[in-house]
Image (cartoon, rainbow, N blue to C red):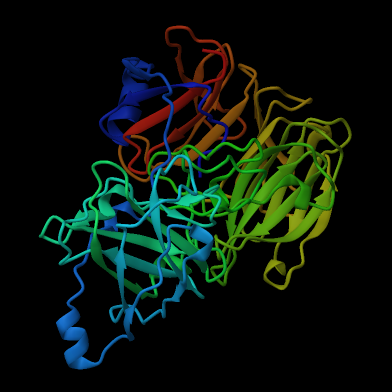
Length: 498
């Protein structure tokens, strides 16, 4: 998990070839390769959920009739040029792979009414489903051919809300007639406009409707009640967090932010959101996130709130559950780290010290404040990290030392100070152990040191922590945080002020 780097920052990437090459460079030249690749943040756009899996399957009606699979209804005729008078056809939902089939015979030759000004003269067909489903609509076999470029379904006769399919789900039957699929359609009544304007096909037609259950109805964005939804120019903006509206593609239900805008992301789907209002300590802001996996493999998010640390189970990421909140002095800066079954929390608020929280019963919904200690007189710190390989914690930006304070976690409920490094004021630090190369067996800290740039420090000997390299770069302003790629070939750095 990477924390402390946001889209506000430029990102600097050092290409070091390998961790061995990087350490060798530090040992021989005393400096890291400073050829930087800077990338300005770009506006990210939401990707529709499930687009990669979208296709337009053709339903073999002959096979349906021959095998008896699915649910087949007879020919129904009940359309009208007045939306509210259209007979609503009940569309059964078949199991996945065995869709139902309903055939509707219609004729739009006698349209005189204009229910929705934006649609013009329209003949209406209506259908209803009682559970979330994927619905396919087509005019296969009809003459003259029906190839309208409009494929929306109105959810009411006022046409105030319209459902559109993803573009990949619009095709033809092979005879120039329209076929379209609506993924994860929510239960309800839908009205389809058969246009009768100039240029539209006029006369008798045959419409086929089929419905089947869909995995999208049970995934992160959909359920049997709400169906699938997404952004749409014909749909008003969300009214608030976790509001739903109907549409195709992605999920406004979770992607809707309090501002009414969408969650913009590239290759990331927002599965759920826990508003600040859901926490009992009534925070107005949050300031940090970390993670913990219990011995039983259940997953938890640890959130720094304004006046507390919160623990949220995210084992089921679609349905997060707030487990506990441990109150503490209020501050907009709070940071947590994990070692074994304990969470260590520091705050930039006088008198807090080091909070130690017992996570051994978190699976039972219990988190307790085990102790509050003041190692070496430390009462405040900006950040803390743990190297789980060595069992040491490192507090930075503390009132006793603005650099690095090493804490020995072999006494986990009351860790003593093992050493100090004070060459610069540190905002955040990443500490790793090397197992190969010239620095095998060494513990290296990458200390983001504000205007002093990146400090690379050998912290193996806590009594004699040594600066191995200082890295500055164009427009160094507030070196904020850094993180290594998993193979340790790249170091990603964020500058808060650049």
